[in-house]
Image 1 (spheres, rainbow, N blue to C red):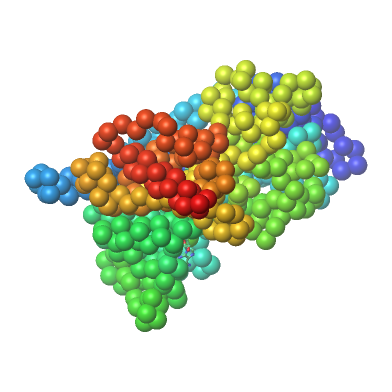
Image 2 (cartoon, rainbow, N blue to C red):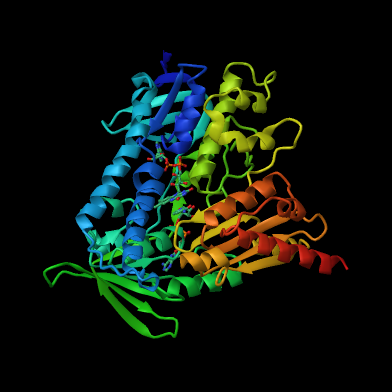
Length: 515
Ligand SMILES: Cc1cc2nc3c(=O)[nH]c(=O)nc-3n(C[C@H](O)[C@H](O)[C@H](O)COP(=O)(O)OP(=O)(O)OC[C@H]3O[C@@H](n4cnc5c(N)ncnc54)[C@H](O)[C@@H]3O)c2cc1C
Ligand SMILES: NC(=O)c1ccc[n+]([C@@H]2O[C@H](COP(=O)([O-])OP(=O)(O)OC[C@H]3O[C@@H](n4cnc5c(N)ncnc54)[C@H](O)[C@@H]3O)[C@@H](O)[C@H]2O)c1
């Protein structure tokens, strides 16, 4: 519906709901709302195929898949299998791009099926009057008034100031690295977080000369120093990790045949050093863009880290407003499954409100009856009326080798809160199946409450960490205690038997604590 405004000559479109951002969170929210109304708009600048499929989770895992093939072909001598794999960089990148485009195609097919009248290609901001202004690529501005607003604007790579200008096209971010037509000869990866570790190891395994710089002595953002030290030890077996370094300046040298990136840095011993090579990957974090949206005009306050205040961690709703902020945009847990769940739940809640069913249908019933909700069933406990609303159990996995995983509360959080806890652990250095498979480097630590015997959290570097993460997150979510987990069968010989050893260690420490 379009209402002409005589005073300002503006044409204001009044909609039931607007979704800003067409990534995973925005797609999920839009799909739910469009089930109950056609009077919904989704505004998006840039790609419509989602960060995860196009420049995030999927292309990074495709690159890692190629890298692991290469690495194991060349590093199986101890098994009596000698190999000398040739890496065809162009074919590596072609498969990454072809498969990535296939995944992106599914997302775009869904977008194509949406009513063209409901899609606006442009950038949204809030005006002083509280209207949403959509600035389109053609230079038009559309004015929108919405009864419900879902902000799903994601995050962008953070690049230190001046680097783009100094490094030009020798600088890569996760937005550009998957577009390379071939593998570079050498690369500095700045940042040893999730993106830095995953991509540095993949590139190194594909024969690129890689060094990783990190400003502190922490890899993968680990908050348990023992796991951190173990991770550093495991990765140092194959990666050139330069931790505790300060990048003083970056420049570019165009004097030779190929442009060279140059990094001047101070190493861990305080010595001035220089690195030269073909590319620099800035993996120095991602930032949301909430501060650029004019949210102050609609009563949303942000903290120093650009996170919304008065925020419901389950649905993303800003209390006292009709606004939801979901996915990477709220900067609380910038992970795919969280973006997906938050987009779905906010969209579902808005759909129930629009259809006037919010009061008579509980969210759990709505989800149980929803054919799209299979991925979101873990949220049922969080939002059923019988239980108070709680946050999703935190879970993160890094797809390095060995993998890193964290679930529940970190050791740092537990200590800061002063919670009573014991720590049970297992080393994977000599664990049976890990040794059989030649993947024996790792450590798992489980933090448990000695009073309730419940798991508070866990951290691990080691093989199959992705599966252990899911088991432990399920136990935390469903409040299965240590004995409950130990009562489950563990097949022999599996890497998961390591989990049983850690649980037994936790159990014996609980007994000692209590006696
Ligand atoms: C290299 C890499 C690897 C990753 N690997 C994993 C992984 O293995 N597992 C995992 O769980 N997570 C992973 N992630 C994180 C995951 O990709 C994100 O958490 C997820 O994609 C965020 O989805 P979203 O919907 O919040 O945002 P996005 O998908 O980024 O969507 C936001 C959309 O909003 C648009 N937009 C922004 N501002 C505006 C505006 N003002 N107006 C209109 N539109 C706007 C953007 O252009 C974009 O289209 C990875 C990320 C990267 C970069
Ligand atoms: N497997 C996964 O789930 C996965 C994979 C990739 C990315 N992600 C998501 O993407 C987010 C962003 O990842 P990221 O790795 O870019 O960010 P991050 O915040 O995890 O890590 C950034 C790292 O860069 C370092 N750093 C920052 N500035 C630096 C500087 N000037 N010099 C040296 N080091 C510097 C930091 O100390 C930190 O170790 C993650 O938090 C995660 O949510 C998830």
